[in-house]
Length: 310
Image (cartoon, rainbow, N blue to C red):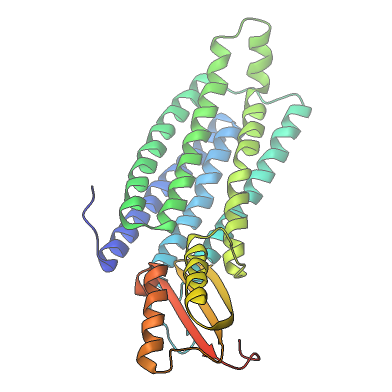
């Protein structure tokens, strides 16, 4: 069981982890692109280009981790929480483009007769990168759990994708050593293009889902399945049953680490809570039901007897 971190400690751990990720990715990007060019393997070069896009991605994650901790100011009066889904959307879009480009190259290689590559060199490279990616993924998963960071969680997901890339490449080229002739010669020619196409196809759904989920937050689309939405609606049903409330409406949107919650309560003629302390007590009850720390929610509650404002 981890010791609970303060908000400042969690943010520092988050930034240290993302810096480690950036430096590791730079090394893998240089190794992948350089070694892929040297041995003529498009699958290895894809691994390097994936790492290169991750350099940009992790750098943006690190920038976002710093920005989201800034308080609201005159320009961003709701704070900087929206930066996080913007960065996630941008990174996933770049990865989608890389995957589609790789898929096109792989299919082109299959149609044009393949691309013979020395299997041993690719297997050794893939084994090393798989171990590195797996270690970073394991570490980031632990950090993400400890500081509850969606940025680190998304970065860890990219490291797991990198691990799968390397494992698929390793298995694909190692098959050259176990297949009988004439399949061995045929696979040796087509392995690079086939592995490239397979990796691109397997990877495509991951950035697509990240892009979809985060664009919903950028556009502030409601999510009825969100736990906070369920809590708000549950407590409002209870309150409406206890007091003379003619109607109420809720507007809930999640943006990065912040839930923006607006509740409009149209009271009836016999609404009993007439003083500020009484309505504040009702607000406190709603806040307790939401169950979020103060820095993770923006709550506004309006009481009115005029249907125009409800």
